Length: 166
Image (cartoon, rainbow, N blue to C red; front, top):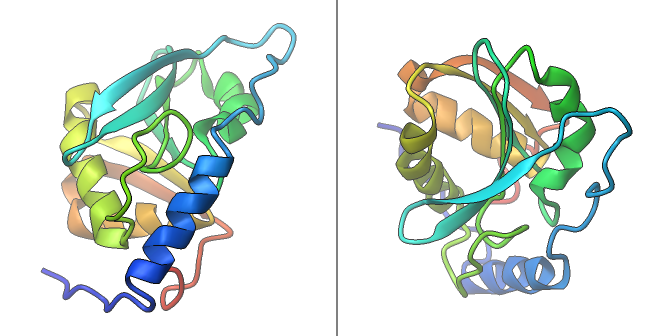
């Protein structure tokens, strides 16, 4: 098991992330692309909270998309619509973002990874392709390092630095 990195600012960072997430409740990207597959919104249980989901049904290996800090799963709408129908595509709203619960604390990397570890087995039985952008890239890397049997492949788009944004 990998040792947990110390939280840089602790409660101050938790509060800042919580405040930013409350301002942006995930409307970006909700305008459908003409002719694109429509997303089906839903919710799944994470580690003590519920996470919002968007699902673009499709065949083939599943893909899980993780958004960046102060964003939502809707940022993946155009990408997900192109992945489906070739892939069963899920975009997950990380805690405090989109339609996910917004607790006042618990925004460390380990908390977010625990949410995914608790939630994803209910959605997916096969190993999945995991794609993360920015903070979602850091979460994806941390998840893959701790749950390698669940990850078929890993794509990081402009990931947060390893030593930043604990």
